[in-house]
Length: 141
Image (cartoon, helix red, strand yellow):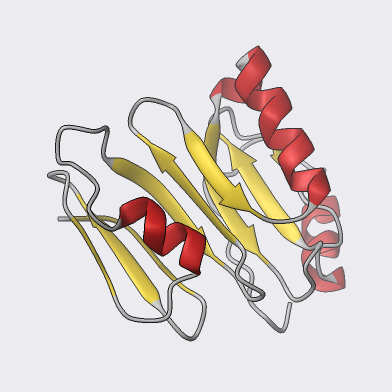
């Protein structure tokens, strides 16, 4: 069964339930290097996200994560990891610009600088409730 699938328009990566993963050519080099030759005894990937400009996020079953993205994203992810804030990351989405991303945490809270205006209005109409499970963005917002 598929646990997670991500694409950036050039490459796709799929994570399967029983510690397997597969990808197509074109993954960001750093992510490709992290996965190529990865020993099956190491914790399996659990979450993956891809974005334009070689942005990516990948988390493993032991709670470790590796990413390439904007500085604000790194700052938030490090705070979450160091403090166990929000119970960890549930999903990551990358948007149009390098600095645009949307993090959803396991407790339903979220962090989303530069989100598209329509999504911002939707979130406001929902009173910014902390009940999200997943959000998708793309290169056009």
